[in-house]
Amino acid sequence: MTSVVAECRITLDQRHLDAAALAAMLAEAKAASERFAEEGAVTVTWERIWQIEPVPFDATLIEFCDQSILETCGVSHRLPSGPLHDAAEVSRAGIPTVMLFVQSLHGISHNKIEDTREDHLEQCVSAFDRLARKVMKWIAETN
Image (tube, rainbow, N blue to C red; front, side, top):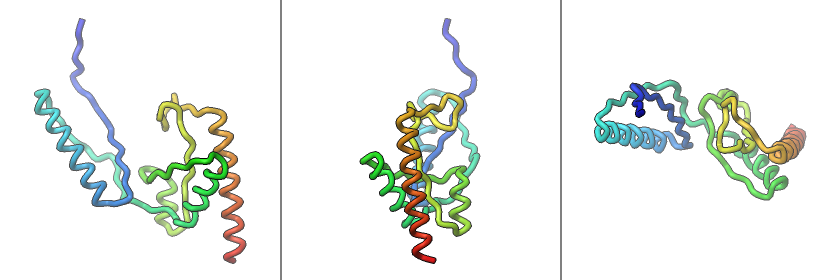
């Protein structure tokens, strides 16, 4: 037996460090959803749940973080962040801020089935320790 859902809700989390590029991404997503809705003879509506402007983190701390990850793992991937992270508010308050992420299995995060490989957690702790040591040294040298 075939069933058709009456309603489908999707959330979209878009990130970019340039506000104009972020606005263009949203416009493209809306246009695509309207095109698909027309093709499928359904309706689409949009509701903004949350929005903040791009908040850049401290360049020095980003470099320290990158170095710490490279020293630990040999490869680093820089990711823009912002939505709903406390760190964005801390940075906006003028406090030097950076975030260090550890990979989640299957790309799932902020969900009850989120999981991370144990060796990735160990590498993350090691990279975070290196980062903390670099930051403490930097603070001591600048004060």
